[in-house]
Image (cartoon, rainbow, N blue to C red; front, side, top):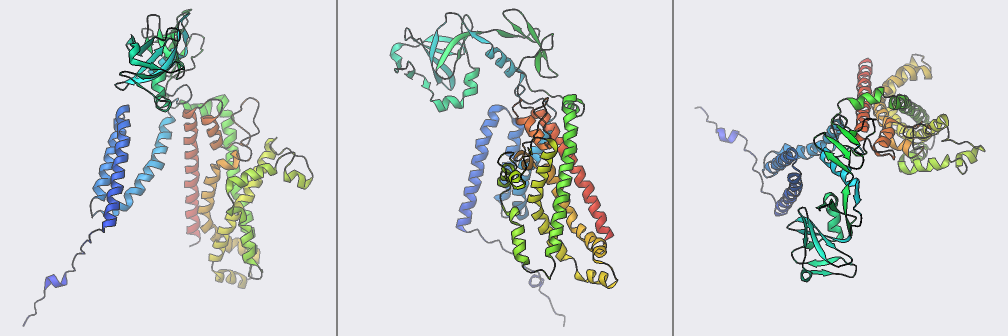
Length: 525
């Protein structure tokens, strides 16, 4: 008699999803609600600025998050999406923004559009009309639009200034305080200082047209009738001085107005310049001369820092890895103290220790050396600081790598008659490099962009007399920072181009280094 098998009994039952606990459900609803609220708060400014691509990305990201987290399925996506969004927000987007900025002239004097530059030029050239009234100003709104409530100090008459012109305000509809400012006006809403400050850009660009010119604000409490001395002429696409007829013609390829002698107006506008920033870095004599010198020192600094810290860390690790040495734990604890201290605080402390008059280094050796006064002494001081701060890390990783090497290999080399140094060079060191090579490459990449090591110790100095932006100990990253945020005027486009060069250099070195690491692994298999 044939036995019948119950197929349903043999098939494993699907796990039944348990309903979420009330606390978890409430937390989920609250978090999703906060996410939607943040998305709505970000959407309205994007709509007002007409940034439709960013708005579309925001809507798509919000919809994706709701689709994933409102479902009991798609478990892997619930873990992958947060990390992916943070990766895009804090890695991909900054890289793409930097690369796109590198192809523009973005910087001081070239931040906005051409229309904004024209308004700025005309506004900066406004001069007060002779014998005109200096009004006491109260900034208000009416139906959301900016309105100037103007009080004549002599007659106390009040006028409302809009984009269409002036209109009188009945005395019974307005209340004026002792300083002459309007505190209440029928149909108008005076703005507080905080509210006016929030709309500062709009107020600065606002003006009330008059027969002779326009009334413009002078701070938040005064206004005057003025006329611009430089006006834009759309027919010639130029700015003309109304007094002597001097003209500056628009150069749309570079984003500024220039006259026949090559003189430019201070205010320009943001334009695409193609590869000009990259070409300037390599060919402009004022930039290329210092860029190449800084690049060479940058390579030397990163390479020497890795070599000296690795050499000292390895030497200390070998000494403390000897079984016959007593007190190993105590020595190791003392040696990693520099690594446990705050880096920026130690850098500032070392800077003071190298002080010419009061520094510990000069007093200890009885010398009077201006360590940061010359290029070579400044470089030596920086490398010494890096040695002190970096060798504990190399000591720790070398200790771990040495202890991971099988002792049988060393014993076999000793049995074969190999001397300790020969055994170390042919057996221990190659195996050590297999483990250490990726860390050495990462250390090189870190030190190539070690901003704090330079900025907190020497600040990039000493500086040549003809270029206050490029110091003798500057790295590319500190040089880029000074170009972007220095006192000589921000040049974000040029700084972004140098950042792209830094990225390509570090990427190339890392790729070559990791390929060499792969070769080491093949040799030691």
